[in-house]
Image (cartoon, rainbow, N blue to C red; front, side, top):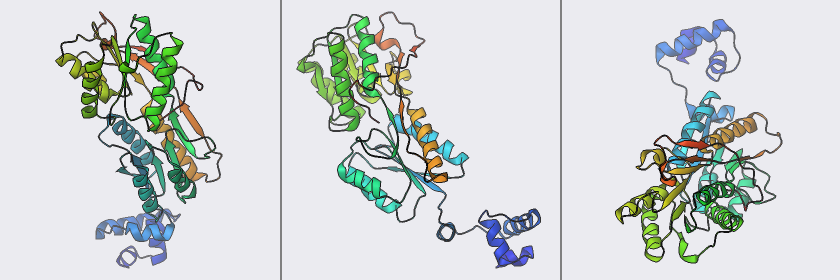
Length: 349
């Protein structure tokens, strides 16, 4: 090997240094200098086969364009980089079969671990997660009895915060624009809405509830048009901020004043909630904290394969902005109270 000849050491010594194994300071310096002079770059594939590591961690989310997942990606990348890993991101959509395909591929040796945030959880997906040779951490809710590391938000409790806030403003016809109810977040947020409305003694009407085809801005436009065609709410809660921005656009286009005519609350508390006019009140579900916690759990699992399983719940808070407070100041106020509500109807991603 040219590096060994240039450094004046054995091939075995070069291999130890380039693979990060212990070697004397003198040998390490000579090998690194020789490699730099020759422009030598180790073959990552060959190295991964030899040492059994790729030094890569995979993050799989439904939609890399969603601001929530962008925030998660940045935080996971920071944590895993500090631990010496590269992050590989995959956008799998909401189909569990696509996540199973990705998991099968990763199990062939393309990553050392996986952080997965699924919108839909099926028995088939659970079976593949359990059978995986890779350490896996799930961001989201898992069925009872599934013994995997996970981090989840209590969005049902978050919905309770939103309804409580709107009820205090005297709103009584509180509509709900949800995403698909066959998803984990869709089901949890619907349950939270139902329970919170009942707790406040606010009547629920079928015409005040609509389900968007997806958790996207475009789907939100269609859903809001449908809602306003069939009902006249005095407040709207949306299952995420993209839906809330869409609702704000449609309300404004139709001549409604927000918040004077209709108060508006989103979920996820992403940057876009602050960028609109008026700015949008939103439930903070701790996306950055969930991502950080998940990444740390995965690094822990890689370092301690037999460590006890941890399943963490991140509690929500409400960030109050202009869209829900008549006469609200431009500077948003934050209701930082955390609500522990495991009996509120379920948790989700």
